[in-house]
Image (cartoon, rainbow, N blue to C red; front, side, top):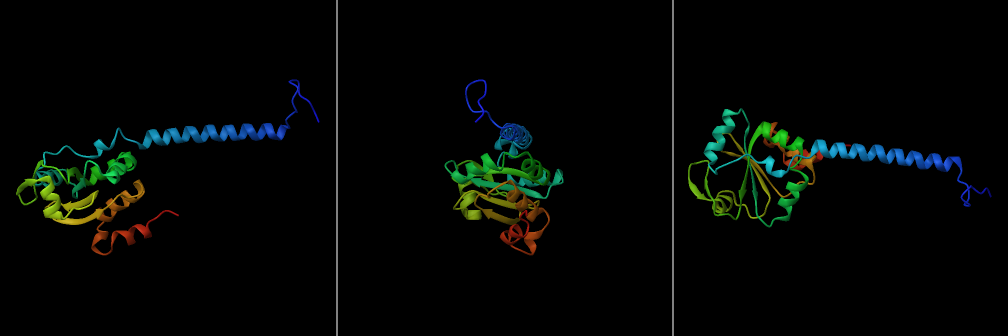
Length: 193
C-alpha cells in the first residue's frame, strides 16, 4: 500500500477525478436549481389575484375591456391546507401568473366570509352565501371559470398537484376543451412523457 505525505493511504487518481466530477456536477445542478427557482417563483401567490371590490359584474366588464376570456374565481377558506398548498406551490409560479392574467380576471372569494359580493346578476350577498347558495361550494379550493357574460363555464374542486396541471386547466378552458370532454381525461392525455 502506498502512503501519502500525511501518513494516510494514497488515493488513486481515478478516485480524485470522480470526486472532482461529482463536485462539478453538484455545482452546476445547484446553480441551475437556483436560477430556475429565481426565474419561476413570483413575489408570492397574492400577485396571482387581481384587486377586486367584490362586484362580479364589474369584474366581467373589466375582463371584456381587457380582451380576456372571462373571470376565474378561487373559492378558499382561511384554514384550508389545500388552498395554502396551491398558493405556496402553484399560484406563485411566474408562468402560472402570466398565463392566467393574460386570459382571465383572477379573484379570490372567502367561501366562509361575510364580505359583501355583488354576483354576476347584480344581487348583493355575503361571500359565503355566494359560494354556498349560488355555486354549492362545500370543499375548497374551488376554481370556477366564468365567461365574460358571467355564465359558469366549468369548475374544478381540489388542489392540483403542480403548475403543469394547473396550466392544463387553464388551457382546457381557454381552448374550449370543456365543450367535448372532462378535465381529467384531458389532463391524462396531456401529461409529459
